[in-house]
Image 1 (cartoon, rainbow, N blue to C red):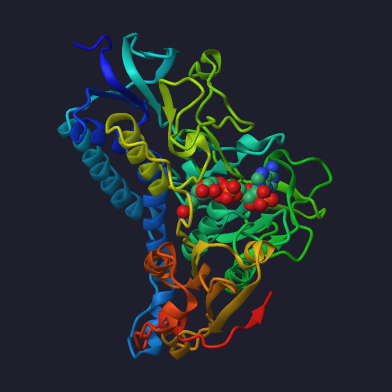
Image 2 (image 1 turned 180 degrees about the vertical axis):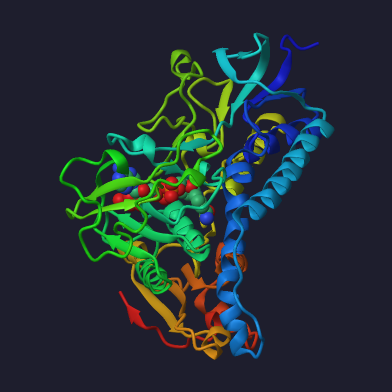
Length: 487
Ligand code: NDP
């Protein structure tokens, strides 16, 4: 008989927490409980990857009729109905949440719909007033989007709000140049919203390969997104209350003054009043938008849980500091996923959860492998990437760069200007492929497979001796004979 109520208490029912709980219970036979204060599935399922990807699919249909016409189809673009889409989306999210709940239940985990705080290294207190003891506590509470520290910033939406809009705005200003900013810029543009994007840096998608970033930025502008680099938001106010002397539409920018009227239809279902927003940019220009979206990063959900009081170390943004086994400074408390702000991706949180179970419940100490993680940015076109960018690789060692950019067959036939990019960054010394960067429709699907070869340590010559699949875009990845440059 254990001295604790549970072997493991998991806080957070997102991808990482649910996986750790059910593997610990189902495979390791542990006595496990899990508390979730919101919906099961976490950011990924409820307000992130899944609804976002379904919105990507919805937005891509906009380009289909004109392309189909080039192929001989009599097809025209009808109206997009946001409420219809949202109805189907919510049904799907309910279905997925149900699956998550039953996975937890069927693996014998006790689940609690409650907020949990940690009272001492082995005690969890729930918002219901119940307390439970556990030999191990796993914090998997994820993160949340943040607004910049700016007067009236509450007037801006964050990514969570997008899925609750009653109607799409006519115009939107997106602040930021990361994953979320660029993905939503493309999605909303595809759905017919006039999109303006301000990014404070010199090029969007900081940290990714420069050539890939350049092509995505060009493609986004080509598609009609009004992208302003080196530009940030300076001031904002409700359009009706903009500072005196400001007209809200003084220049040539397409979005300026485009829709000054306050849109009652825009009310988020949170009950907050949706109103047009006046914005002054760092370049001095002013404009009014139906909505502003802050895609300015996410912070870990680690505050007000009692962690600091127990001696669990938090970093500058509130991330829980853990070692390679996801263990905090308090030996009985572990943390995985976005709350640790290591690599904030769903499959990584799941891996961290599995490694935690191996280490703690299967006597098999398993450090989390964060090397060569393939990932995709679902812009249009998509970016698929694994390994080092050209810039990071050349700081490390001598490299060769194999690269090609071309118009893909499908859209070239329809006379569209789209270009794709295939790029390999290769070590001169070992011939290993250090990085692969693909900008193309379906790049997310391609990079998953390229990622296997690269994780196995494939050399450029391994790629070369693989026969091309013809006619495809990805065949170019095995047919690039001469380096474009060395560095
Ligand atoms: P990111 O950190 O990727 O991007 C934040 C952006 O906001 C950056 O461009 C940053 O600029 C800018 N920014 C930050 N603070 C300010 C400010 N005060 N004023 C103006 N701009 C500001 O965060 P995201 O929110 O886009 O995404 C969070 C994480 O979620 C990602 O890192 C990723 O791990 C994950 N994610 C993954 C997806 C995928 O796999 N497809 C999709 C969506 C999210 P600067 O570059 O100058 O710092």
